[in-house]
Length: 437
Image (tube, rainbow, N blue to C red):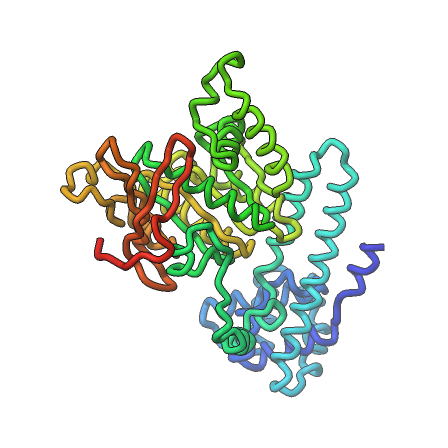
């Protein structure tokens, strides 16, 4: 059935008419080259002729029917291109040049439909193969579909500016912020977690990057949104323990107690927390190690487009798509890939990052954007950069949440409270005054 449908998706009259226009007009050929490839033509002869026209154009040749005829003879493809009689028919097919844009769209549309049907055949095969895991099949199907999206015209994919301008005006004054993170001042400053946003959270080891991310993830999930958390450093069991501690306000020390010494209240609180946490849509993946695996798993899991937040803990453990000349280039490739994933999947991504040791030599003890390890690409690709700092004094739980970069608003410091025994980080006030870092 699909094969029959595929064969019907073509219009040879339009193909031959456009080829005739390309032969007669260099401008039309240039326009066609921008939108079409030889594979977009259904008829083999038309593919060969268009390929020859493109080759002549790239060599800077003046194109007409005799020049094309000679090029086809020289390449030995004249017969495959339909012979001299077919070229003569092309001369008669020349129509009004003003229709060329419409013809290009028709050829491209039919080509995309054929490719979509071919992908449909492949997806049917994936669905029927019991040896292929379902998640792997979905991820492969997603990749196949993504491969044919690149040639879709802007007006077909919703890329035109006018609708976006109208939508922006319609939202004026409606306070259309993103999803709240559970930190009121931070949410007000950055506008919450928005689709397509890449947020980097940086801190020195032991300051609380993972704790901060888990607090955000738990808040988002409690609000009814789906969250996917990639833990590259800790196993799922440890993440589960921390989530229970956050939800039930349990000290981390209870996990080290023997059953005989464990307070009854802690057991009850943990049991009640588990009941609550089982109801939220927070998923933990501790199997990924490369950015390609993160993308594959995320795209497979986000088939229905319902993931709102993706967390990666943490950047420096993640490996790139390919070997690079330097670690800096590898990190640049990773952050660019994560930003593209956020845009493509229309979700917010929070990636955690280590900071270098320069902070320890600074009198203020406050981190800066330049403290991000391999900071150039991280800072450039991130829409928001949040830096965490805790007081150096052992008798205080004070600290700072620093908005170091914000494409959508102001930057500055927010006073914070760090209770690492219970894995809690909170803002000290609902709205803090901006300070210079």
